[in-house]
Image (cartoon, rainbow, N blue to C red):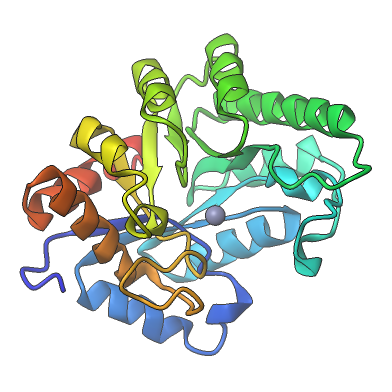
Length: 274
Ligand SMILES: [Zn+2]
């Protein structure tokens, strides 16, 4: 583990999630004992955005984001039952929350073209996702905060949208699972690439990790989801496990874990102004 207690930041958690209800204080303590200096808990709809803010107000080291995950815009047939609730985008609601002092970014928002099922009105849903993403980009610019983008199967379109709709404070393409080629385009625009446990599942992202400069990476767990190896896939993960993501990056790049932790901490502090 992080023996020298080099500062580290988990830039994308869902610590307000009910799966942390029974032992949240212990989880936070374990993270802090492991060197964690900041954790960002990410809202995905009205309810969880509110929860994220509430948690950030009781825990000094926890900061929040508010936003609406694209899957909450429609009831996708391919989703888990728990994900199947729809919400109408309410600009005033999010705009109000976005101004909170402990809200450091707007997100997660974006495009999810992966979860369509047979019979879904694909083009209608895609258009709605694009419209709502642009609304959130507008909120970012009004409150002067960066964006946390979720994207699955829509990177080419995301590049176009972010080129045409500039987020002044930029942001992060979280849980990145795209190509190096697209990553380069986001980096050129000034975005960070959010890397999590997915890169530890095999060698698919080694090329990306080799090519990407440390100054362009944020590390994250997306906990309770996506436990990095060597943790079992079906286990809940938690912020201190972000260490394994840093380790994978260090191994592939042939640098020390300390350097990865230090640099990604600086990147997160600078982007989110914490
Ligand atoms: Zn997430």
